[in-house]
Amino acid sequence: YSVVPIVLLDVVKQAIAAAYPTARLEEMSEHNVFSKVGKMSGTIGGEFTLKKPASLPIATYMESKRDASRALLNAIAGATREDGIGVQILIRPASDGWATAARKKIDKIKKDRMSGKDSGGITGLLSVRDIIEAPWKPPETKDSKSQYKVETQLTAADQQQIDAIEEKVRYPGFEALVRVVVSSNTSARSQTLLKNIIAAFALFDSPSLNGF
Image (cartoon, rainbow, N blue to C red; front, side, top):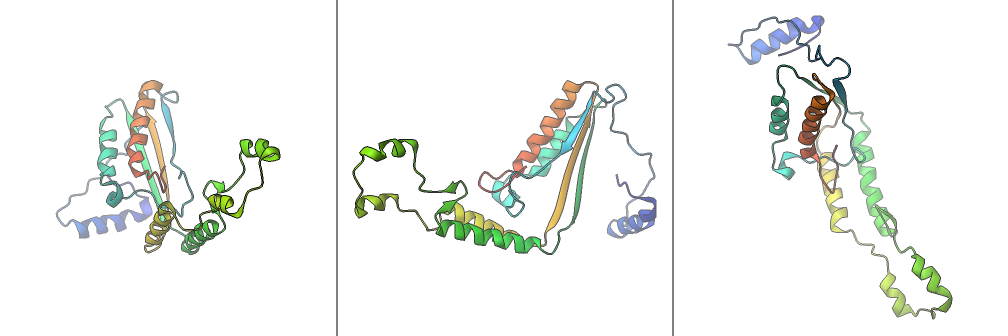
């Protein structure tokens, strides 16, 4: 199915005919995904948001080795005639500054590491035990202090983030908005269908980078 505004109807028809010369187009009434039985009580939905800043990429097929589109289709296929599922994906070109912001993220990772910081904050902070023992603890020599030296070299996790961001900025960027609405006879059934959709999008999650 293809749903388009009236003003773009002829343009879409020509585009489909050009790509698929043997295709036959038929005008149909728009499908209603909302249940007449469940009404508002059986309808839930929302939109996906990224867990981390957009400069960090989500997991791709090359990383996960799993087909997320198949998982999403399987989740939608679980709907019956009494159920309705709508997944809306809106995309548009990102502003020119998104790549610059991503490169600033790389610089920040390097500077934080050089200054003794990490993603969790400043390293080398004193613990409660250190504070309590301080009045009775003898002064530390230079050699004993060396064990508390802050690591300024990039860790494997830092380098992985930098490589992932650099790979992302090689390609054109797009802003994306993913919305989901589910409608069924009962609220419990709608919750089950929505959880299946969320589980499918979990395949895009990368533990060390980004996800939904």
